[in-house]
Structure formats: structure tokens, C-alpha cells
Image (tube, rainbow, N blue to C red; front, side):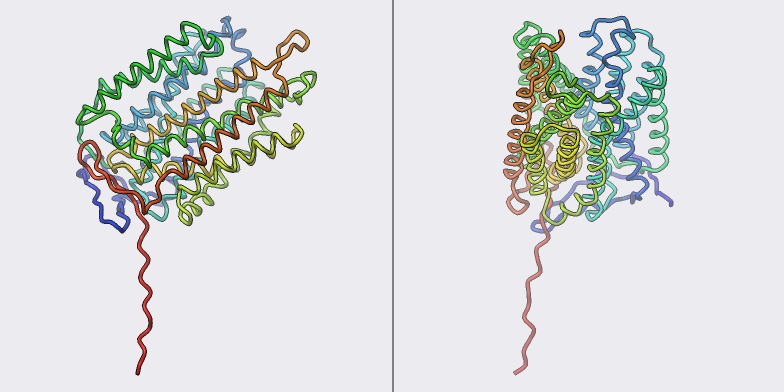
Length: 516
């Protein structure tokens, strides 16, 4: 199979046109083959793998590094914070300087971070390396934007569904793999494996994925990027550290209030910029706003279960709710949900073509809510958790497949990577909030068992109720996204028209001529 190549300077900037009521088409300058799509999916899986890489050794890190447990928690927190900041910034850079180029840069940063972790012997360098690994999570939004540049409208939904599914698949598959490696080898091997995966992915993308055209020559808003980074970091620290620091502690409140204040000033600044870091006028449009809010809800609904189910499987039976399985066994029980997400990607693409992404997103969130209802209704067993987790994997897979389509059909073609990056940030806000809320809930509703404070059955029931309610909120938000026929094209901040897809008008039925 031969894949065409072009340099990022070869293609002049183009401006999408709007010709209602037909759907404007984006003609790919270089066609992307199936292998290239698979490589982008592999890249997404590797990126999401970075999130769960250290989970199997998290409990052992205080002994391995001779450091307090609250300090070693930063090994996970720093990856989340960096990923949240990188997503919108890398998306904007991709729109300006070439999506493939920025994607390869992020992979290189991830490889460097993995090598630093692999060579580290203390907590400080491990945190630095884990922060650099977080850059990899910015590649998923860039990969989806690359698909829009190079695939026809018929192939695009299925390809987007496949790459979107990697958000869950990488974590689901990566957890048992990490557990196996950590049980049979030195913990540094985890990071050597991550570095090798990054190098392989870098080479494959260089060879298989065509360069993307530069759609805008705008100046990069450095001050806007710095303001966004400071505000997001402070807010995410408040959310992720609320439990260890205390919800009403000075540090938590200072980060929350200070971060929100910075983001408010940043928003005012962005609205007064001709070439903003994030086009808030486009982001405030109803289709984009409702989709981003639904993304927060779906991210929360997904992660609430990912916090609760492993604990149910691993807690001792003396707790009254636990099934006392090993981390490895629990990982293999939860892994099929990720495989379902991957298997559903072609089906999700077909559903999006038939019914539209708005309805598919609503149904996906509804399936997640159904999963939580089943969890509340049936006894806690290995089989019931496996079934509920499969249901939730199905719902999240369908939901995540439809979200990028809703975003990209409502933003300028020159802002697809930035818009996808912002949307990825919204999902991360949902997952971070879920981790904090459910973690605090399980810690607060606990009882002493053998000297240990363990969550009660009631704590898990409340967590499932919250997950179901948030998933239903996601359904309602999805239904508030305007139908394609209701949306009006709106110019972005730079005056460029928004590429707003509309269904093709059906040809009028004509009666056959009759002869007298």
C-alpha cells in the first residue's frame, strides 16, 4: 500500500465555504489509507496507556522511593494536570504549524519522559518524567483532527469512532499489562516499555500518516496559553488534591479561587483578542457548548465506575462488599469493557451516519445510566460487575465516538485541532471531578474493619446513584444540541466561516408523465 506524502508548506491556506442547504465537503489533498488510521488508533491507545501505567505499583511507591504516600500521589496527579494543559495548547499549535508535526513532537516528549522515569531512582525525577509523559494525551485530539483533513465524509465517522475508542481501550488493556510486568520484572521496565512504544509509534506515524496542511497563519497567543495553563493547573490541583488536603483547607480553597479568578481574567482577555488561544465565541455557540458540557458529564459517568468497580473487586470479603481479588484478576475482569469499545467503533460509525451524532450521544449516555441502575438492582458479584462494566463500556464507546463529530461540524476547519483539544479538556475535567467526588465519598462513608477504614455498601450505592444521575444529565445535554437543520452558520473570531454540516436535501419525488 502506498501512502502519499506532502510537506506542510506545499498547500496554501484554504477557507471553507458555506452553501446551505447542502453539506460543504472537505476534499482531502492526500488520501489516508486504513493502515494510517490504525496507526493513529495505536497512538491513541499508547497515550491513554500513560494514565494507568503506574496504577499497579502505586501502593508500593512509598517503599520503592522512600517517600511519603501523599508525595508519591503526584506521580499520577502530574500526568493529569499536564495532559489537561497540553490538549488545548497543542491543538492550537497543530492548527497553526501542522497537526502531524505537533503530534510527533508530543510523542518525542513522551519518549523523553519515559526514559527519565526508567532511569530515575528518586521521586523528583519520576514526577518530572511522568509530567512529560502526560504530553502524549494531547495526541488523541490531534489524531482526530488529522482524520478530518484526509478522509472523505463516508469514511470519517467510523475512523473517528475507532480513534475515540482508544481513550478507554488503552487504559483497559494497559492496566493488566502493567500489572503483569510489575509482578514479574523490575518496575523500571514499565517505563522502558512505554519508551519503546513511543518510538515505534513515532516511526509508524512518520512513515504512514500524511502531513497536514497549515490552515492558518495566525500568531500564537503566548500570554493566552500561559494564562490558561496557570488557571487550569490551579483548578485541577484543587479538584485532585481536595481529599488529601481537605476540601476546606487553605491550599484547596486558594487553588480553586485563584484558578477560577485567573480563568475569568483569561476569558476576558481572549474575547478581546483578534487571534485568541481559544475562540470563546465559537465555544459559546449552542452546539459546541452543549457538546462540551455533555462531554464533562460522560467523563464523570465513566470514571465514577472506574473508581468504584476496582475497589469492589479488590476489597477484602470482611468489608461486607468486597470480593478480595488481586489487582491482576480485577484488571482482566474489567478489560472486556475496553475491547467492547473498540469492537463497537465500526457500529458507532454506522449509527452516526444513520441517526446523527446528537442522538447517538444521547443514547450512549442513557446506556451508561442503565448500567448504574443495573448495578444498584443486582447483588454485587464478579459476574454482575463484569456485565455492568460491559454495559458502561458500550455506552461510553458510543458516546465518545459521536462527540468529535458534533464538535468538528460546528467549528472552522482551521480550528478543528484546537476545538478537539478543548473538548478533551472537558472530558478530563469530568474524570478528575469524578475521581475526587467518588474518592471522597468512599473515604467518608466507611467503617473500621480490622483496624482499616473501608467503604460501606451504602457508599457504593450512593456513588452509583450519582453516576446514573450525571449520565442522564449527559443525555439531556445531548438532546439540547441543535439538529443539523436548526443550526445557523456563524463566523469565528477571525471572520472565517464555520464549517457547519447539514444533511443533503432529499430529491423531490416526481410523478411519471402520463400519456393522454
